[in-house]
Structures are given as C-alpha cells and as structure tokens.
Amino acid sequence: MENEIIISAENLIKKYGKGEEEVTALNDVSLKIRKGEFVSVTGESGSGKSTLLNVLGSLDKPDSGRIMVGDTDLLTMKDNDLAAYRRKRTGFIFQTYNLIPVLNVVENIVLPLNLDNAKVDNDFLEELLELSGLKYKRNSFPHELSGGQQQRVAFVRALIHKPDIIFADEPTGNLDNKTSRDVIAILKNSVKKYNQALVLITHDLSVASQADSVYVMNDGILSQGGGLS
Ligand code: ADP
Ligand code: MG
Image 1 (cartoon, rainbow, N blue to C red):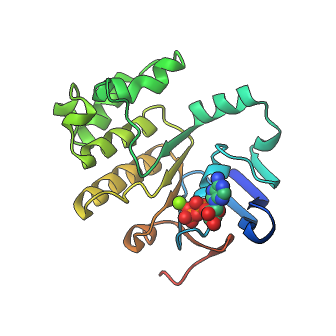
Image 2 (cartoon, rainbow, N blue to C red):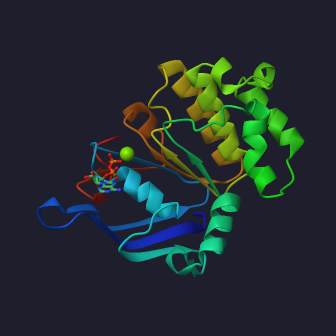
C-alpha cells in the first residue's frame, strides 16, 4: 500500500525579472510527495531547483499554483501560522551550514527548539550525536570543527524535532565522498525510521539514484526519471 501524500504541489509558476531578463524558474511544476518518500532533484545550475525547494518549503512564494499540506493550501496561510508550520514540521539543510559561531554544538542543535519553547528529547539528541560522530564534539564551537563536522551539526539540527518533511539543498556540495555518504546515511535512516519525506537536491548522481523518486529540473520544467536507473 502506498503511503499517504504529505505535500501536493499543483501547477507552480514562478518568474523572475521583466522583459528580456525574464526567467521562468518554475514552469508549471506539479509534484506529490508521500510520507517516507525520498525524492531527489538534479539538474543544471540555474534550472530552478533551489526555487522549487524554497517554494515547497514555504521560504518563498510562487506567482501561482497551490501547495496542499493536508487540507490546507500553504499559500493561503497567515505568516504566523506559516512560520509555526515551518519550525515544527519541516527541517532545512543547505550547502552552507549556517551555524551560530558563539554557540557550541549542542546549543546550535537545540536553538530552534529553545526559540519555540519546545522540549528537547535528550535521548534522541544523544542518539543523533552518536550516529553523526559528534558525541565527543558536543562542547566544541563551529570554528573548532571541520567543514564535514559542521555540516553534521546542521543535519542533526534539521532532524532533532522529528520534522514531517526534510528539505535539503545540495547538502553534500562542500563535503568529501566519505562524509557525504555518512550524512546521507543518517538522513535515510531518519526518513525510514520516522516515516519522513525527504526532498534532496544534489549534483551527485550516486546520491540522487538512491531516492525512491528521481526528478530532473530543466529550465523550470520538472520531469521524472532523468535517465537514472
Ligand atoms: P538552481 O538551484 O537550479 O541553480 P535557482 O532556482 O537558484 O536554480 O534559479 C533558477 C533561475 O531563477 C535562475 O535563472 C536564477 O538566476 C533565477 N533566480 C533565482 N532566484 C532569483 C532572485 N531572487 N532574483 C532573480 N532571479 C532569480
Ligand atoms: Mg540551487
């Protein structure tokens, strides 16, 4: 039996610029994502991948279309509700780690929960620190960590509140192969264990091909398959 649909995007259009400079970053994109589904998106630079991720993740709005999460269209939600939805139900990982320099590893990880007055599941925190090899780095500050370790912190921060959907935009873009494999394994483990949806943008075809559904963006047009098997 197929899992329930968690997010359904319909006919998304997003243009930037005017006249000769106009770019159609999303050209009638429709996509359904199910619980527990790992979706990968590849495509050339400038093809609209980040725009798609930001729009699906409610960081940006399309010019037209609908994004249904359950019975609610994200595009009709009030800003406060949208911010709460984003904090509680989604997790984001970007190519840059965006850690707070004056906070240590654990403080960086629990910051979003603290800002939300939400309880930290300490057992889960320990499990993630162990899984990500950060157990003995828990009191370190970002500048004391390698790039790979900093990205592991960002991964744990995106997972600690057990989001329904994880959005990752080239999260392994700055990492070596071994670290990439490790962090993708942590993500996949979380997705399976907690039945989460994962939308992952990547240039790495060996990562993309591990997905349940593989999409390719081409000049704002999303298509499935993309010649990967
Ligand atoms: P990708 O992530 O696949 O590299 P993007 O989604 O970042 O592609 O960009 C898609 C297109 O939209 C590109 O032509 C880019 O220049 C343009 N674009 C993206 N963001 C903006 C913006 N804020 N203002 C103007 N143009 C933008
Ligand atoms: Mg991008």
